[in-house]
Length: 82
Length: 155
Image 1 (cartoon, each protein chain N blue to C red):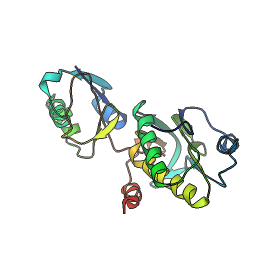
Image 2 (cartoon, each protein chain N blue to C red):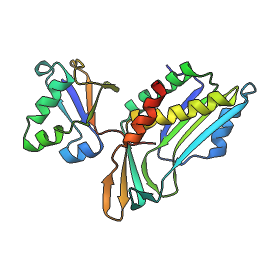
Image 3 (tube, rainbow over the protein chains, first blue to last red):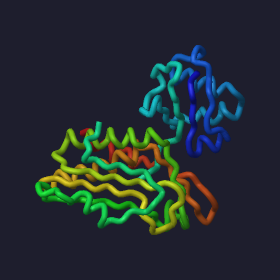
Image 4 (cartoon, each protein chain N blue to C red):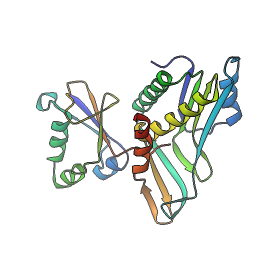
């Protein structure tokens, strides 16, 4: 399984903090995003936001990054700390 | 990995500036410079009155991303000690949000490293601010100017 977590405005828009997906159905971060967007029209719209960032195992990554079973993938809006 | 001289804290509690400066100075006779930056909650943002904000972060990734930023700073400048504190949870106007303190032998390294750390914390560390304004709650939008500030270190 792959654990997927969401933060901040994205978590609120989806009304979901985390979920799991089967590792054999996806090979990259982009695949995961596509699968999430296919859930329904609302998720489709939320994930059409090109500004969303992603991380794999706590490192910022791009869409082509490979994922495997046991990984933790995060999606979130651009950061605004400091 | 960061050295034992780097202290990173993500905490709800407030911090005391003089305590933090002491941490940088205690038993440290070779550094002649200490530079500190404190970020606070402003009462206005984007033309709206702000009364408080809530800070969320991504536990685990936050620490990892800050360690990476500190390591990069250490490769670039000759630095003694580094102290970074970022608060989370609900903060009222005027309250302290973030602290960056750097010690070095000479002032130039500490000045540059402190600014570098803040600039990259702003665009890479996974924190998000939600403001409580006169028009209700609102997640802050990231600023393009912060991206430019971080990018200018690459040139």
